[in-house]
Length: 358
Image (cartoon, rainbow, N blue to C red; front, side, top):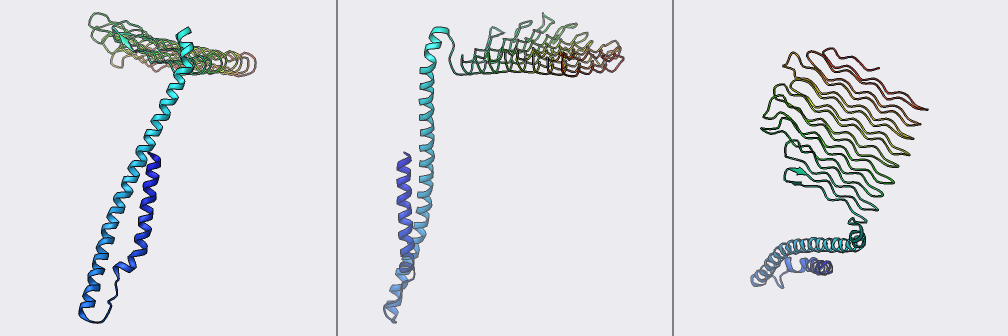
C-alpha cells in the first residue's frame, strides 16, 4: 500500500510538470493573423487553456489528498502488522514459562478486578522484565483491597487496591491492599492502597487503614504506605496510614509513610517511614489526620516516625501531627543515622496542643 502511494505521488508529480510546461502555450495563444477571426480563435483557445489549468489545479489538490490518505492508511496498516508480529513473537517467547510456571517471561501483570465486591490481586510481572499489576479495588464493606502484583527480575511492584467503604450495617472501612514486591534485581516496591471510607451511613465508624508499601529487594525504593480512609460521619475516626516499606538491600530509600485519614472526631495515626538498608535514606513519616473542626473534643492523629538511614544515609523526617480542637497530634521522631549520615528532623506537633517530635 505504501508502494502504491509512492507510485501515485510520482504520477501526480509528472502531471504537474507537464502542466507547468504547457501553461504558457495554452493560456496565452497568439493570433495567427491580425484579422478578427484569428483573434477570436486565439482567445477561445486561450480561454480553454485557462479553464484546463483551473480544473487541473483542483484535480491536483484532490490527487494530493488521495495520496496523503493512502499513505496514512498504509502507515497504519504497516504499524498494525508490525505490532501483530511483535505480539506473536512475544507470545512464542512467553508460552513455555506460562505453561510451566503460569507466568510470562516478558510483560506486565494484569490489573486485578473486583469480584463479588472483593478486590483481586494484581498479576505478576514477567520473570525477566515487567511490572506487577495493580490490585483491584474492593467495594464490599470491610473488604481489603487487592494486593499489588510482584515484579520479576526487573520491574516495579503493582499498587495495592482501595479498601471497601462502609455500608448501612458496617461502620468501618476496609484496609488498603499491600503494594507488590519490586524486582529481584532492580525495581521499586508498589505503593499500598488507600483505606476505605468509614461511617458513610453509620455513626461512630472508622476509616480503613492504608495498605503497607511493597518491599524492594536489591536495588530500589520501598513502596509508600497507603493513605488512611476518611470518616466524615458523627463520632468517626480517620483510618491509620500504612507504613512505608524498607528500601533495597544494597541501595534504595525507604518508603514514605502514609498520611492518617481525617475523622469527624479524631484523625487517624500516620504510617511510619521505611528504613534504608545499606545505601539510602530512611523514608519520611506520614502526617497525622485532622480531627473534626466542628467538634470541640476532637484530637489530631499522631505523625509517623521517620525511617532509619542505611549504613550510608540520612534518617527520614518525622511526620507532623494532625489538627485537633482538644489536642493536636504529636509530631513523630525523626529516623536515626547508623554510620555516615544525619538523623531526621522531628515532626511538628499539630495545632491544638500537640507536642513536637525530638
